[in-house]
Structure formats: C-alpha cells, structure tokens
Length: 89
Image (cartoon, one colour):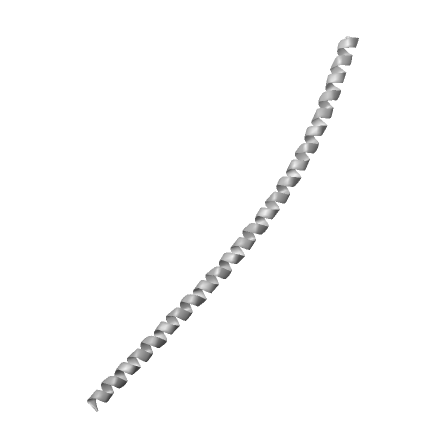
C-alpha cells in the first residue's frame, strides 16, 4: 500500500506539473499574440501617419513652386519698372 500511494503521488505531481506547464505555455502564447496584434496596430498607425506626412509635403512643395513662379513674375515686373524709371528719369 505504501508503494501504491507513492506511485499515485508521483502520477498526481506529474499531472499537476503538466497542467501548470500547459497553462504557462498557453499564457505565454496568448501574450505573444497580443503583443503581435499591438505591434501590427502600431505599424499601421505609423504607415498612416507617414502617408499623411507625404501628402503634406507634396502640398507644401506645390505651394512653394507656385510662390517661386509668382516671385519670378514679380522680379520681372520690378526689373521692367526699374528700367522704365531709368529711361524716364
């Protein structure tokens, strides 16, 4: 009887260790899946932000090109006015 109780205790202890081992692995995998989902969401947010920044840069570049063209026109007109004033004066 003494021998049977030791073997039963050993089987029980092995089962408890196995259950705890399974729970540890399951929790570990759930945490890894959660971290992966969080990482994907963060990367998606960064991608969206990068797209918005690129769009803003394009708008800024277009506005700068327009202002440069307007400035060139103003310079040409100013040069023409200066030339006319030199001729008159």
